Image (cartoon, rainbow, N blue to C red; front, side):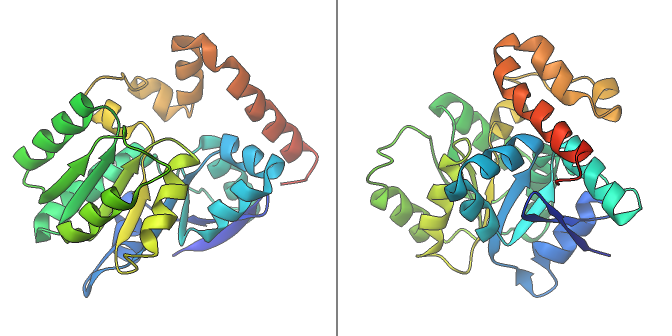
Length: 240
């Protein structure tokens, strides 16, 4: 069963599992369900509160899921039931696996040439039907040629790793020309998939402390964690 919860003026959907999300919202018995998936975490909720344009971008997405532990926690409290966190990198990997079963054409975009090409080769070795790829180093002010390449590839699933909100802006521009495609913003997922970035150990993930592991590994993220403090404050004040 799917429930929508308003988190800081963003409607976020809950799902029982990653597989139930894919079956209900992406790969249907009738084929791919077009749309745009965006991972929602406390940082994005706070960014949207401070920038209305980001709020508009996020609310255009057809699928907003609880990627952050803080979002899943607040949803659990509002629904009075456990809402599982859906990590974006795990959702993407599972989606790629499921796409291979029916040979759905996939296009990959973003990251460095080394990372994206390694991602492509690894997916192909797993049976994924990768029909094209493009690194993230192109003229973002003039993306027409890249959009055309994606359209010409015949892809039905397009994953975009450009960082937020750049990847969402690109996705919605693409969607104007490819309304029957499923798009997913994936941030640094390719780096994790190719082991260029180490994900938090399982213990941290089980305790919903992946954010703490990233902070300890990258102290430069401290400023970004200030948004988490703001998010917690809003929750305690009943303003989420």
